[in-house]
Image (cartoon, rainbow, N blue to C red; front, side):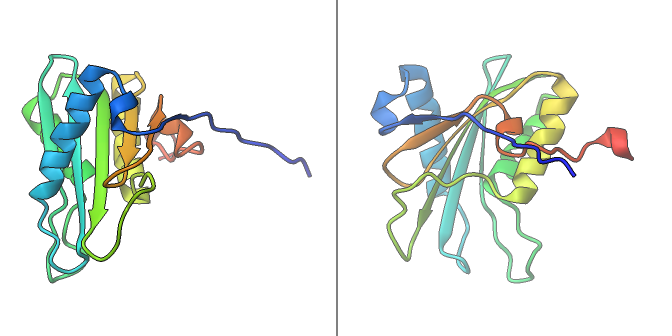
Amino acid sequence: MKEVKIETTLQVYDDIHELPKALQDLMRTAIEARENAYAPYSKFNVGAAILLDNDSVVIGSNQENACFPSGLCAERTAIYYAGAKYPNAKILKMAITASSQNQVTDKPIPPCGACRQSIAEYEIKQEQPIEIYFMGAQGKVIKSSSLANLLPLLFESSVL
């Protein structure tokens, strides 16, 4: 038996104001998208904003449905829309923010497992890392230079 250690390096910003101006703008776009979430069941609103290499910004917010689990997370809403509208564009950066109507979300909230897998698919497809920035409703912002930092043992098409 051999033990393998996997390490991840992330950057932590004290708050949105510490980000470069262009990233503050992208995160504010994600915050605006979060306000349009349809989350009557979970009361957990998520917004995402994606910057593409053609300078387009695509947004998404979570959309719930009484017939669980047929709703869709903000990250997948945005990434699938980007793939449908701009199929040849590369995703450079993704900003994600989440808030709860039940409690203060002041810790960074990363994408769920299903969203990580979907982001991984696009990162592999474009053969280029996607910078991911995530936060709660307030407080610290975490930057991952690649989805591989958040999901180090990727499930991808070469195993199929």
